[in-house]
Length: 280
View 1: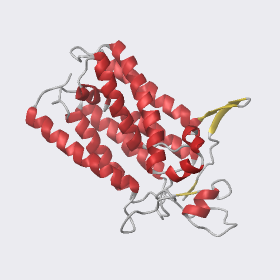
View 2 (view 1 turned 60 degrees about the horizontal axis):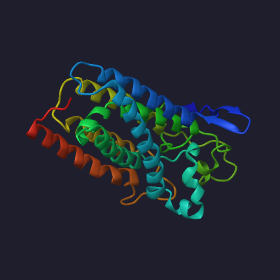
View 3 (view 1 turned 45 degrees about the vertical axis):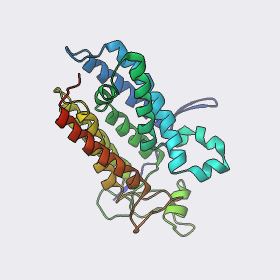
View 4 (view 1 turned 180 degrees about the vertical axis):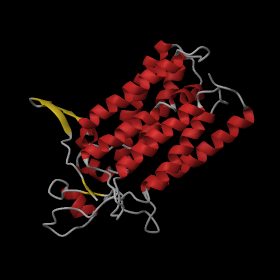
């Protein structure tokens, strides 16, 4: 059993201005994706100019941040938004929805394609291997923030968390008695997601897309991989306290939102290999 190290979510402060680790993780994700995207665009026959990647990453960043925050508000925190509309702007406190971010990126890719004369799936196939880097970095940010914990467990790598610091976790999610100092050992769910949605998914997609594939195949594989990993991880992740389980004592909002992704991914892969039009 391990003890959560209580990392300060603020990396450095300059007077009233604070730089949060959560924001730094997003910056790392965007920067790494931009660098790898430029490497891939520079390959002969890629069909992309290096300069286009700069614009592409800007569109992705807007889609992720705006879509992720708006999606979280609609899917997980709408009641809080009604009480406090300014909560929508407090990104540094966490609260980003992958599914909302995905929708935001899809819209951004449509706008990018119109400006640069790129097909929609030509753009999504290109960015799909780059996105897991940001997902993994974002989950590390969740770990530093001490949010999105998994359920109590007895696995050797489980972590106990201070109730003094994370009052809501102890009182609302775990419903521990007042005065409890530490939580029971919990699954470090954020690290599971960083590994699967970040490292493992990046490796799969990067290797798969290293050779020419039919249009839509890489995008479809991204949706299937994320859907499988996220659906499985939700079994050990505690649901958001304001929603709880939606059905059968185990179905979560994350699983419900993931099912259409799995279906769409499977359809895209089937269509890709039926049509076999390769993307650059």
